[in-house]
Image (cartoon, rainbow, N blue to C red; front, side, top):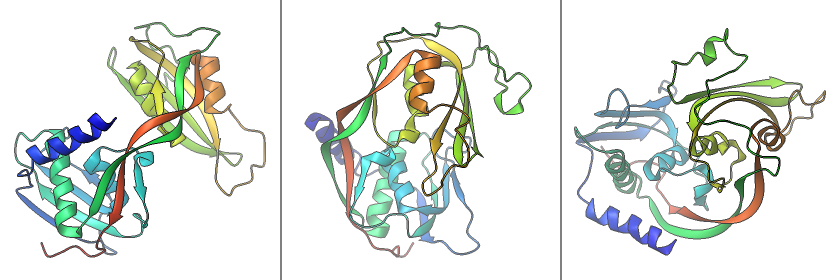
Length: 262
């Protein structure tokens, strides 16, 4: 893990000169747009925009971090910013992230360090009952008439729809030809790290429906679907086992609430 942290610093040092061609950053106002778009991997790879974005979200983007990989002593979601940046043509995702790191350091005076900690997470393993999916099997789901889940044949993809039912958050998920690594991403709502120890290397199609409690809400009826723990064991033959896992964290020390001049 120390090697991984050291590598992050080496990459940052090698790319110290990588910056956006042009970039603006200002405090969001009542008329600011919402959401982010553009950058490497998007349709407009040379123009990145992020409207009404919290520093929490910008740090996630800049370090490709999950929510549980960010540690902070000061709130990162109270101040919102509008960011527009011209990205050099041909920049990679890694180069883009370093450019965004530099922008946060220069405009907000962001101070941080990288740290490795052991935190409670889950191992994803094959349940004793056995794995229930077959590699490459055609996507057989009850969603043929649902426009939210119409996929092109043989394309790796997934979609999820959330709704409120009986005071619970109900998630309906359909995946087509997805590797286990992507299934882990589907479980990010656990808000804790999940490590793949299934040994499975294929691509799988499945439908999954599960519920989770809403903070501060008292349900008025039985849950309409099982928890994610029960659902993946019953439908997929997988099991989540609680375990302490090593995690690389971005520890935010301080920042200025108002960006410096563009």
